[in-house]
Image 1 (spheres, rainbow, N blue to C red):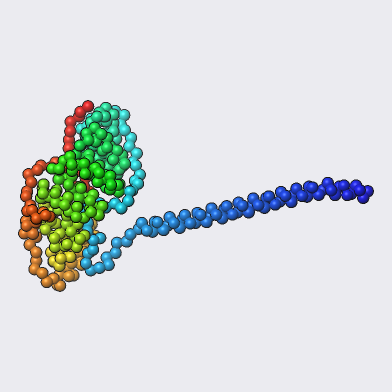
Image 2: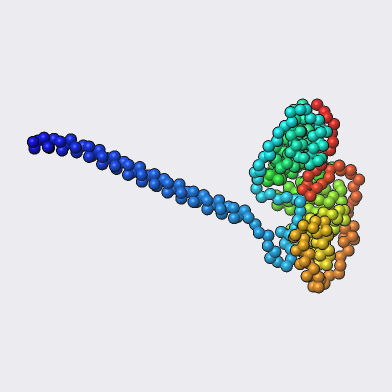
Length: 366
């Protein structure tokens, strides 16, 4: 009997050992999973904190901290500084199923139905793939629809057909500025200037690129080249004034800005820039008038309203006589010492505040 009990005991012992082994393995697995979950949660927390931090850094609060305007007060639409490439959602464009003529697609663009125009020009190009103007207008439509990457591709296709297509080179550069690809922008606008040295737009946009790259003196030269071709070019005058304000050469900024305002007093941002130059020079009364004119052009211009109130509060401290802006505009000299020469060049392009150039109508060609 004792031997039988001993044998049964030995038979049970291996089973107990196996149970202990299984229990140990299970414990290791449970601990490993627990550690993995902890690590995942910690990593998740870290990611959330980092994302939150980036989001906070991206925010900016515009607070008026000084009684005088700073460079932040300068408003300009033709000059857009983009510090890094941006990624924008691409609008979905559905192409029409029926044939489209150039005139029909251009009509949609003229009516500012830009997504529809992009769709129609894409369909038009199915039948006219070698029409550089069709690709150009597809690029313009996509750009206005904020479909920047497709706009860039369309301009490049136009240039594959016609390598010195002036409008494609210039507007390809503008798209690349918006994308923050300044090196590529410099490459395309350099070709535009080389191929078309008589183009005011090419020199002006060259100024924009150089300014964005921080090459201020070269940008001034580029705007001077544009103004040598047409001394009344509004955006070249405005952007030149902007650079001079940034360089704190406020009195030098007044004449080109006064001349720009004389050409078109309805552009609020230029009126505001003139106000900044006048105020920082000490012409507080004239600055208040310029800010008021900016508000007359755009009643929603909150910054101009704040600046006008500030300038009006400083009028009593003004020691300088009132400037004659008409005389200053008339006596403006292009940087480099040359006097202004009115140009008879007939430029069909119409600049808007965002630097978009209207298209030139071309016939349908295969």
